[in-house]
Image (cartoon, rainbow over all chains, first blue to last red; front, side, top):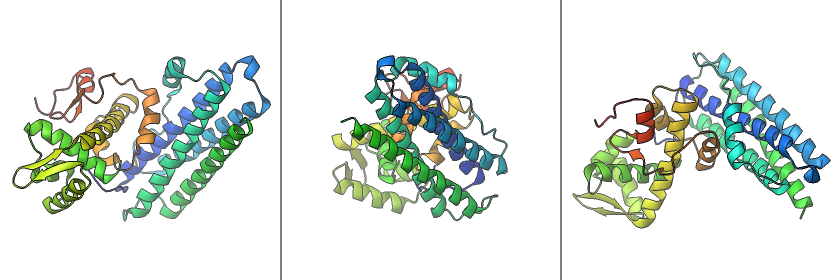
Length: 163
Length: 146
């Protein structure tokens, strides 16, 4: 138990990165489901592009996080296939229209941003020596956080253009 | 989850275990902090009317404090279930305790999209076992308090 918001070991860092990988997979898988199930009369080139970019961006983030976990001195297998779980839940709770899809996408990007922001702060607060270079780790995470912020902005702009 | 919410959750659980006010010592033990730190935080939470602190007896949550504690417990429950069911972490209790300070409620809500929580969450949480009772049952474990 630790009440302090900081990362104290390679193992803890690996687990948090694994959570990041899952968050990216959720965005990736839900964007795919959105794309597949978008009703014909709601199809729009802008949302199709946005979902496609979201999937590509999440896949890129996931691969970068997996590469960091692989470099850490841990036995954990970074990759977790959660697509079937996402599909199962999506069938029950997935949004059914354009606005619902955009809102869900916005929520996914905002959550990822918050996660990376908290993680960066927790690493900065820690005095632990990780088995990988701290500055390179922080630089990668800050870069990913930045693209999440851009993703939030892109969805918000599209939402605004529809009001 | 911020420090205040971790304390409120701990008071909620210790109250259940002790069937009465949560003593500062029990809170300190549960949170792995010094009794002086626990005492100081209990004072701050009392000032915000989230709990009532009686000297020599302990802390009791107010309605507002209990509401926040239950939300924090639900977030914690998501984390335990996620670690145990999605990532197959054996020591899911220990890891959830280490990670909860870094995991925000919004992140837990997103993780909740891929786990099957029971509708009675967080009432399902077994304070003695320090885990969701459904999870303990599902994994065929014996609770810490058994």
